[in-house]
Image 1 (cartoon, rainbow, N blue to C red):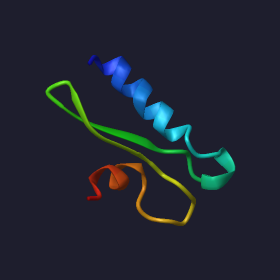
Image 2 (spheres, rainbow, N blue to C red):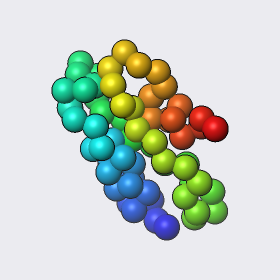
Image 3 (cartoon, rainbow, N blue to C red):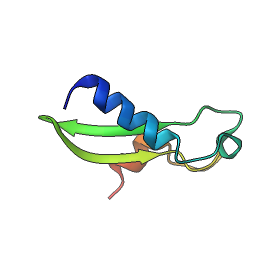
Image 4 (tube, rainbow, N blue to C red):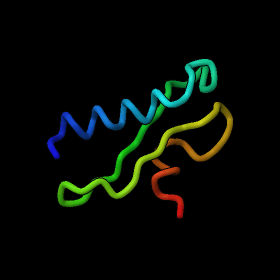
Length: 60
């Protein structure tokens, strides 16, 4: 999996939430990849709620 494909996957994750849900912050998508294999994905669901996209990826 190349860098562009991974970035496109992160953008797709971010687009799972409506802009109004995270306003005034940007939508956040995250992808964790190791040796070309996607291990986890996540996105920020709503403004004021933790975790952000990267935290969702790291949550068990």
